[in-house]
Length: 84
Length: 183
Image (cartoon, rainbow over the protein chains, first blue to last red):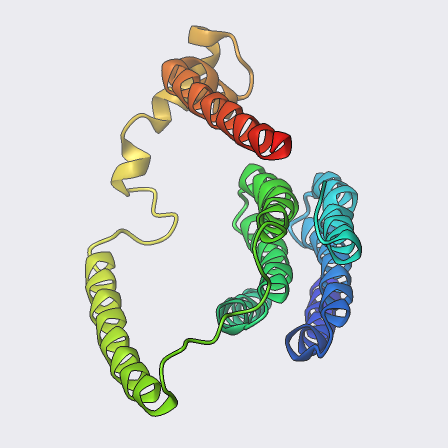
């Protein structure tokens, strides 16, 4: 059951990957990568349950916490042309 | 099944990151690569490596690359050479580099033929000191987790050296960035 869910999530991520590769704007790529990150969080939680090690949930939480840093840096670069 | 899909994902992302003409897009794709790579590490049961990959690969490296990018330009500069000559030298270069890559790959594959199977208990890496760490590390060091015991006690000087390298690198980066700001 969990495995089917994980496969479906990866398939969804592959659909989003098309947007990340095709673009056309940089914002589309950033949004797509952000969605891939969110899917990664869910995938990690599922993998934890597939292996019957639910404490992998902690890693998923940490991922959710650091997922947005890259996006913030990217948006700041697009707005001001630098990170200072 | 999931493994193959993740590896497929990784290959596509790697090729895309190399072939992107826009460096900012390449950085974004690389951060996605790090995220998927971290999932692969978790699949291989290397949770600590996955943590590092997510924090350093997807988080800090992206920020550092964007910081580096803000001091240069995003787009590739077109070369001033005439187009026909450029095309000719490009085909020659790509054929040459393809041959070099194939030969290197063949040598690397040849080198892995002798390696033991994945997770083989009779592999040399598993016969050497692993048993002693597992059985004796609590008596000898008093640390419950034996990965921590190996890193912080048995290989203490090694870890100390690593910390010093990272410290020196950090100081160097801080000094460089400061100097830039004062100008």
